[in-house]
Image (cartoon, helix red, strand yellow):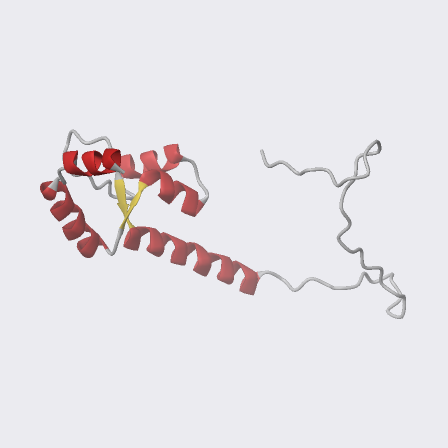
Length: 132
């Protein structure tokens, strides 16, 4: 317990940085790290870097020397809303797909497959799925 108290005694908050962050947070509607922004939009970190270089997004830094880049959450929300609107408009303008092929008898019974765990031929336990 004494070691934890010693660590807390050595911490001196950076008031200048805290004040800057709070002020920018309120002004920008939130700040998120560029890496988190990339994850939210499902794009690469390099794309975020490119967007900040070409002006699509503003890179917000504490100082010119600071390597940490924050992005305005309100800017990200605007991009997300734009993408959602674009997707909805594409769905509205896309032709309706036919649910049954013309040559299929409408009285024919449809087969529905249920989720069945995949198994390896040598194992009886479900195989693990890995994302790449």
